[in-house]
Image (cartoon, rainbow, N blue to C red):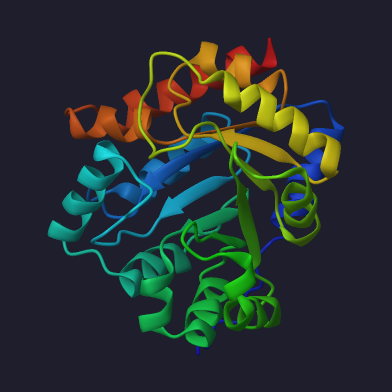
Length: 264
């Protein structure tokens, strides 16, 4: 267990407060270790207008991620990143907004749920997204997470029944992640209409913030998705910029453009 006594900020309280101000929420994603100065990238997207940042902790078999995030994870692993190394890199920094760890439960299981939750809290992270861990099987993780003040974000899919959406809305913490389409993450030219339908169904079932992810690649996508939700998550488009040789400033410019569009 970490000796650090820092407690994570409440993601849900933070997002609800910003939503109450009339703000559409913007959550960029950064793969830990994708470039050597990736922590500076986290700082840059915060300065560009992020409301929280999703930190991808690389895993060798990211089943729900498409080619871009898989490539970013492979590059990060080749750079020598480890879960402990990612958390250590964040531990000595103070961030103005909450950070969310996104990874897969096999990694958490091998790390040890209690130790992982403690180290997340010690590094100042607020929440997790574990897309391969159904809430029905999450008891051990939720116990450890609750003990250390870590909120666990659940995902809703277009095929989820109304009954399941209501259950997910009751049990998620932080926000409810509305998956825009069946399939994996990745850049897209247009948004699946299922995203709007799902977001409307979810918002009818819960008061927690509802954010749309998977395929939010442009400011226009962000605006369209936010009309029926509380905000958006953008990931692959940002990592594609880095993988194609773009700079931290280039990624920050993408985030700033989405922020400007959402605020217009």
